[in-house]
Image (tube, rainbow, N blue to C red; front, side, top):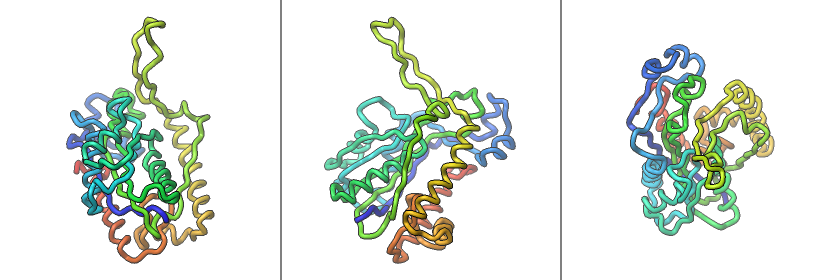
Length: 286
């Protein structure tokens, strides 16, 4: 058995901050941001926390999948910006949607969090432990950004995406994840500092810090390596993979490997996914 995505959902807060809005307090302009990032606007929450965004995305994914929340056996939320240290955002979602039979926990893997969650669920499904899962990537990064740092604050926003995943004979072919802890100082956000009754200080929270040049160099080197490795491991032709990514063939929806055993149904589903995500593009407030 393998994992198959059977429903998707996304949610972003209503408030939008455009590049022009940023020029009111940053030394920047719309052209500078677009040329370097392709971004025209980002959603920023003023009232809804990470758990609220995740819950709304989850409800939409469940409705898209056409299942009952009680069928869900595991909920994983990938987030680096939860509302609280504990309980988990996943527990918040589990309670809010009525997935009373599900185990729930969070993982932290920053930008790769959703893929990590899929990787974990894939293992559970292959081991026969769970059959139906809900995975969510949700962030309110606006609260950890230094809004005076134009090198980082222009890149991020708030929102959530969710997928219902179910055991099936066909679906995700392969996931591949990795870590390099030697580069932790390239992109990080300090949690509470170590202050307590013995030190006499008050814990402080830090802002996101990013070395954009190093992040870029790592990404352009590592992403092709991972893509080539997964194609080789699965015996997938590069032309077939490119066709899948462009929409000519159905794919797994995981961003990791094409789906096998396609019957035409997936093609419509993942074409809809591309259109759905298009509603959250760099220029659209929708």
